[in-house]
Length: 317
Image (tube, rainbow, N blue to C red; front, top):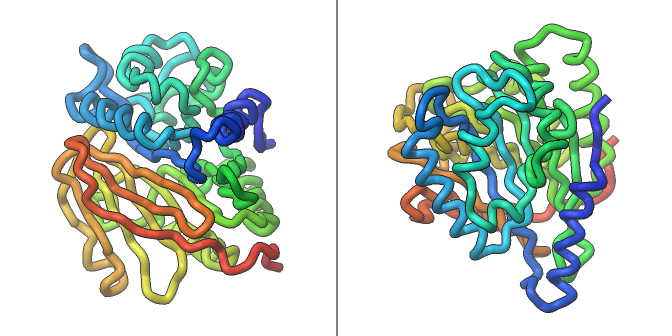
């Protein structure tokens, strides 16, 4: 059974209200998303791209007072980790994303395909060993409140390996959990995050299983955005006949500028693409809109989008 929250993560979100009470907050809930940050399995255990991404993320997280980071899978290249004591946690994560602001933020993690080549349960167990690593189960959800308001942002972290590539009893349970979770959400903004993209123009392309089964649920339950990694670039995709925004943020460690599957998307749906170097995505949630900014490892803010609040807070039948 998936875990919705943990006491430790709830306490970290409570810091939002403390900041508001002392006048620090400007009425925004800020967070970052980055995928495919998994370093390399030999010295120095990180890539130059990962190091640059970590440096700029630290600066931006400090600037916006980021409360959490969404880690979009492929946390350890190329074969995950062996156990919760694996030195890769320190060498490819703790020692790289070392800025003070990235230590204050809670890192909400999910697994990618490379993580499944190792021990995903060990990554879940590491939640008990790290102050900032939060990976309570294979899939889970949490809700944050925008300071100085009653507006909420719900994040639903899903396991796309279980959904589409692992034929186990967990797969069916996971689909049911997603539908139930989205259906009952009354959040002002609803964000779903998984490793594999629903739509992508990169070398891996769109994920057929997610395109046929998940995309209809995202539309039906008025999801604001779907976030993913897997393809090593930054993308923003939105079709004119859908209110769902799709963001790929998978160049935290490697990068690719190839638009191999650009012809597979609906016309004019690709709003932004960048793969020349590393990058990540910044979210600044206010009551009026969420501002989404794609940032390169050079600190360049190359694309901005705005997510409007959901049109209804009444769960869809």
